[in-house]
Every structure is written in C-alpha cells, then in structure tokens.
Image (cartoon, rainbow, N blue to C red; front, side, top):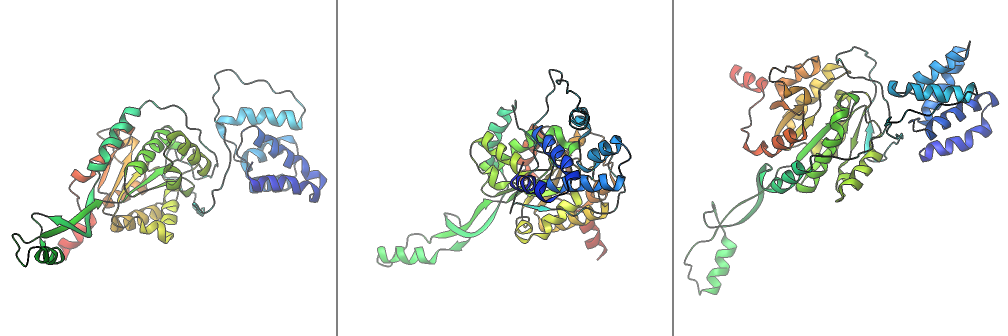
Length: 393
C-alpha cells in the first residue's frame, strides 16, 4: 500500500460511518493479498454498494469486481477472499504451480502524466482494453542475454548520427581553421607549410522508445524493458516512455547500471502494466509536456506496440502525424508484423501508417534490436502524404 493508502486506512475508520468500515477493511485485505487497490477505488466501491442497495450479498460481490478492477485471471482468489471476509468461509490453498505476480498500485510523482479517459466506447481493437487496471510487473529471468550483449557492443558505432554545430580539425576539411593557422604562423615566424582545416563533428542522434505495456503486449514487456535498459546505457541520448492507460517516463530508472535493480525500479514506477490500451491519449500527453515533446525533435522515434487502440482513432492518428513531422524518422514495430502478409487490423494504426517510415516486425527482442541498429543504414523515405502534397503543388 502506498503512503496515501496508508494514511487513508488509518484516518478513515475514525471519521466514517460504522456501516462502511467493513468495505474499507475488505479493500485492505485485498491489498495484503497482492491486489492493486487504489484509495479512490475503495471510495468508488463504497459508493457503488450504496447505489445498489444492496439487495443481497451478490450485489456487493459484483460491485467489488467492477469498482476495484479485479483482473479476470484472479477472480477465483477474489471470490475466496470475499467468502472468507463476508461469509466467514475458509479459503482453500491455491494449487501448486500458480504463478501470480505480486502487484501494487503506485503513482510515480514528477515522472508521469495521467491520461484523461475519453467518453467514446467504440471498440477498435480485438484484444485491447480501455479500462485502467493498475498493476506492477515483476521482472524475472531472461534467456536472450547474448542479443543484448551484441546490441550493447555495436550500438555506439551503429546508432544513427547527425552533424553537430561543433567542428574538429581534419586533413580534408571544408573550412579554414584561422585560429590554428595564426598560432602556427607565430610558431614558425610567419611560414605555413599547410593551411589547417576543420569539418563538423558528428554525434549520436537522439533515440526515443515508446513502449506499449498494455495487456495485449504482456508477453513482450519484460524483454522490451531489458532492451530499453541496454539502449539507455549504450546511447549518448535516449528517452524511454511507457504507454498504457497513462504515460510514464522511465529513463531515470533505466540509467541505473545494474540491470535487475533498474528493472525493479521501473516496476515500481509503472503502475499500468498489463492494463488497458489508450495509445492516442498517451501520445497526446507526451506532446502536451514541452520537455517531453522537445525530446522528439530530430530524434529516431521507435514505437513498440501492436497498435490495438481502444480509444478514439483520430486522436492517435493526429498525434502520430505530429510526431512524424517533429522526428527524424518514426518506426512502428509490432509483434503482429512477423507475418509477411500482415496488414493493420485497427482503424487507428491503418490510418497512421501513411505517417510512418516503417511498420516492421517487433515479435522478438532480436528483431527489435536489429532494427534499431540498422536505422542508420535505412534511407529515410518521406511519408506518402508529403510526397503527394509536393507533387500536387
């Protein structure tokens, strides 16, 4: 339980009606058993019970599932705790082999921006969800360490670079170095054997990773975050954001050198792992924060998502178009694109494809790492809409 939840639990029983204390205590029991229950969800649960009557104990049971956002995979555990608390029935031990991740709802301060929920309930993603289910992910073993070692070893020389405004001495430069020439003239009594020249330095281009952590991307979350850690460690300038039901900047956590400690910190920051999907609203939040939007300018932006948007399609399309205009290139890597005949199934991703430089395979960590390392070799195609507009002019 976070500090706000602890304060709420310690102060509410003394000021609330006696009839509602049982519901607060039940929420506390759920937290102790690994459920992510935020204080505002407890308040909503009490209000829902009041609106329902309730007529019988089933109304309380249903209100808890709806207002406390109980994951379907954990309904059996919720039912057992509900019976034990309200009906005084014993809880049977879970079968061996059940591997439930311990989850906790946390709201990172100064590193995240909540996304407003749109009122449109139009379904445009087959497996995505718009509902906000706050949870954390426990990062465990990983068997693609060789891929990450290869990426870390080759990233400094293969990541895309751009010209800097700073200059350096060069034998075949494009501009005379007058200061160096004058110093050499003073040393040699006015004689110069060769005019010194300079050329512009190069530096790594900024790299921005936008990682979808919704429920439909649950299988890719852990390897993707490990690759994101390798990117931040190897790149001169890199930013990593997670997209789900909210936007979270996890770059400071990934700057921790030790991988497991960095991932544990990320698990504490990101509270919407395996939750709903509102990519458009998250991208809008990214563009609304000036220092976040500034990181996109001239950057290589890579979105790791299946594109199963459940929000308003036009919001996502507009945001993708804006990012495309700001960034050096915008690549979308989807695990569904492993099929050579893949075509976007959602209205939002299908309409956004015209603004993407690449819609490529993101089904494995090796494919994602290879694509990032090959960005400098790709010739940057212009989005189709810009080609059409120039030809029409």
